[in-house]
Length: 312
Ligand code: G4P
Image 1: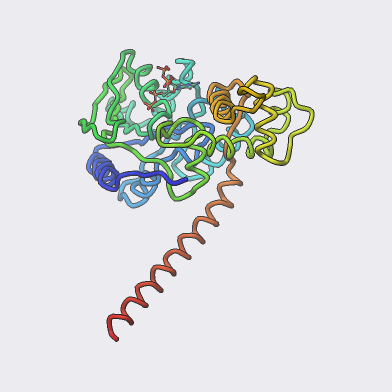
Image 2: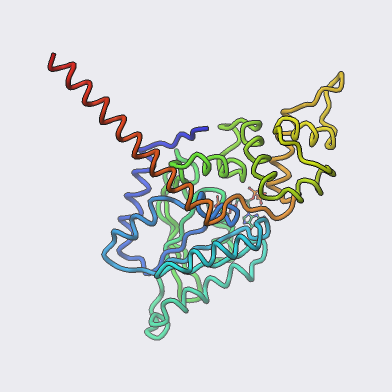
C-alpha cells in the first residue's frame, strides 16, 4: 500500500515551521499513543535538530484510553531518554489530563514565570491525533481547525492562554511517516488516513495478522474463538461467522467483516491495543534504511547505464 502526499504541501509546511521557529521557546508535538512513531511528522525532528537554538520538546501521547498501557509506558521511556524531550501521556477525553500540559511547559522553562514573560509554544501534529480537541480544551472555546485539508491555506493561529502561554498552531498540512510501509498500514488502521484512499480488506488483513501475533487472547475473547487459524482468510471467515456477516447461500461477506474489524479496533471494542513498540520500530528502521540504500544503488546503476548508452 502506498500513500500519496503532495511534495508541494510538504515543502510549504516545512517552510512555515522554519519561518515560525525563531519566536518559539518550546515545541509540542501531538501523536497518537497507539502509533507514537508512525504518527510523528518526520520533518519536525529534522528541523529542530538543524536549528541553532535548543528548545524543549513535549511529545503528547494522546488517546491513551485506546492504547495498551504497558506499551505506552515503553514509549514514554523511549521519548524521555532523549535530551530535551519529555513525554506526556493523556487522553483528551479527560480535560484535566490535557491541562497538565500547562504545568509541564512551566516546569521545563521556569525562568519565564520568574521574569513574567509568556512562553511561546508551537503545537503540531498530523491530522486526527486530537490536536484540535486539545487546543479547544486549553483555550476553553472552539477554535477552527488549521489547515487539516491539504487544499486549504490558513495562517498560523495565535491562541493566548491565560496561564502565561501563547500557543502557535502550525498552519501547514503535516504529513505522517511514508518511508515505512508498516506505518502506512498502521495510520490507515487508526483512521489517520481517510477511508476513501484505502481498501478495507487490505488493512484488515494486516490488522488481524498483527492482532493474532500480539494480542491472541483479545482476539479469542472478542470473537469467542478457541483457536486462531493460521490462514488469515480462514481467521477472518471465522470472525465473520461470529459477527453474522453471511451472504445468501451461507457465504461469508468478507467486505463487511473487514470493515467491522477495523471499526471495532478504532472504537476500542476489541480492547486497548497499540500497533507498534519501540523495539519493532528499531528493527523496521534498519530495514527501511537498507531499502533506501538499495534503491539509491539501483538509481545510480540506471544513471550509469543511461550515460553509457548516450556515449555510444
Ligand atoms: P486533529 O485536530 O488532530 O485532526 O484531531 P481532532 O481533535 O479533530 O480529533 C480527531 C478525532 O479523535 C475526533 O473524533 C476526536 O473526538 C477524537 N479524539 C481526540 N482525542 C481523543 C482521545 O484522547 N481519545 C479518544 N478516544 N478520541 C479522541 P471524531 O470521531 O473524528 O470526531 P467527533 O465525533 O469526536 O467530533
